[in-house]
Length: 84
Length: 84
Image (cartoon, each protein chain N blue to C red):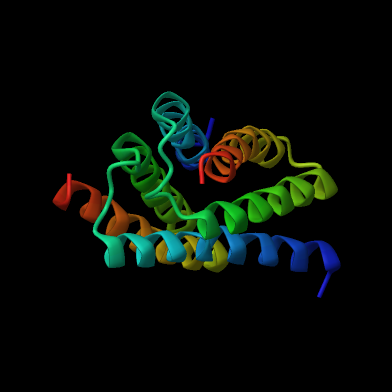
């Protein structure tokens, strides 16, 4: 595989998995005061549109990366709303 | 412009600007207890690699979106380390 393609895949994996520690931390502590509701609202909509874009152009990496990130962001967003 | 391209541009704009309210909130409150250091470490590295990927393939939208997001994430990361 092309080294540049590998770089893109590593980048996509990191930006997808990055949200996991925040989701775990928030589930454990139930504290969301310092998290921005605005950030997670805009981010969740943006990632949903990325997922839609991936489906429309038939790009599996975009679908996978954004599908997983959407689950993490929806988890964090619902916890912010629940523990507000 | 193709409606699918417009969808991708809207998605990129939202996922870039999403970090602005978190950066503003954290600058104002100086409270970072609920933010995950792990998330912002992994995310900052991932976005830096996306930027590098954009530069290597010469893709202006990837460079712009990730260049701006990197500034927001570096701001939030440095505040988390400072007010830890």
